[in-house]
Image 1 (cartoon, helix red, strand yellow):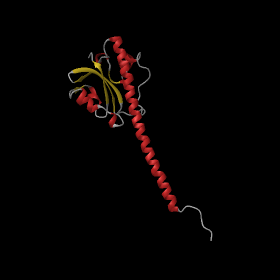
Image 2: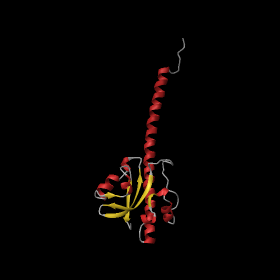
Image 3: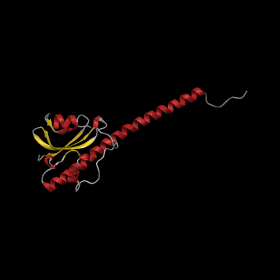
Image 4: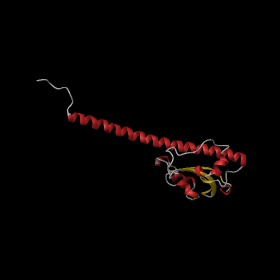
Length: 167
């Protein structure tokens, strides 16, 4: 009688299940890393818009005003994009791809924060809640008084005060 040198069906099932479990953990880790990378890109994009707004301020001695049409979703506001065109190259798009109606970069040219009115930028809907700064923005930066369109973008947003607004 010859001895067989192959695997049994049960051994094969155990091996396939172990490989599947390892693959599941790898995919979950990669998804988490990609979410964090998208949030970092959003924060970087806001930094580029902030720099463009600072250059605009140097040339015009004021930030873009709502009364001039600078307000709202940056991607959908042609007037605001035209104001920043000399200072900002390229399009600002969601790193997760087109079609996400919950995400946008937003400019509020007259945002009440504390006892002052500021020009504010925010990225709405960060992928990872630990990358959002809304609670600190609302309770520390603005001392509980927060008024403006979007109220700073909501709980999952990342907010930046640019400077005192001209209205």
